[in-house]
Amino acid sequence: MNILVAYASAHGSTAEVGTFVGRTLQAYNTQITVAHVDEVESIDQYDAFILGSAVHSSMWLPSLSRFMFRFESELAQKPIYLFLMCVLVLEEGGREKALSSYVWKEALERLNLPREHIEAFAGKLDWSNINGDERWLISTRYEGDEVPTSSTGEYRDWQRIASWVNSVAHELEIPLDLSESPSISKKTKEETITEEEVENLSWVDNPGEISAI
Image 1 (cartoon, rainbow, N blue to C red):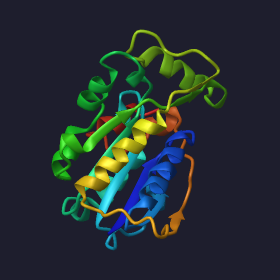
Image 2: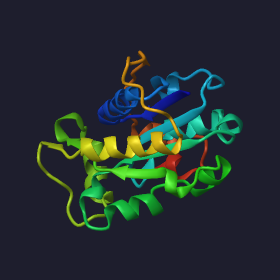
Image 3: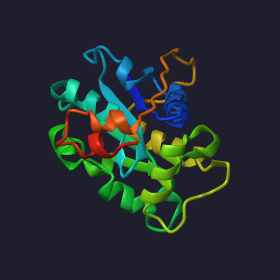
Image 4: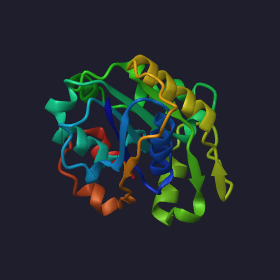
């Protein structure tokens, strides 16, 4: 089986998770490609997809939506799994909130992506990499009780992420193969978004296009 792990990352944290997902899948009899969604030119060769994105302002990043629009017909015909990185998961009920509210429901329907194929994890928060406008947006739009305020907060639960990836491999019925590890083709790209860019986004029917910062 040939799997694409495609991610949208604001400051690199979700990119690291995407790479970790690919490395975890190396234990299985499968070929893995890890890439930023904007770097994917074709998906015809893939049998399944694991997509991931940071959550900003209660929605996944716009680049993930663009990827979904671009390859909608092909994606809808194959298995898709989605992971969201959201600091709200740290709070009681945060995971459920993310899974129910921080997704674009129309996109899930158009891609035949079932809710049980979506998972949410706590991410990494590094205030030193966040500019003033984004810092203000995070502080004012955070829907939990209190925004973590430490300069660097590493909240990613790698064991939980690995457990989810293994469950995905089990659902896809991919056999373990410990004899050798297939190589991973990896592309990386950082994504940052300004308020001006948000105002100029064209897909206004997608909440992620007007609120993702």
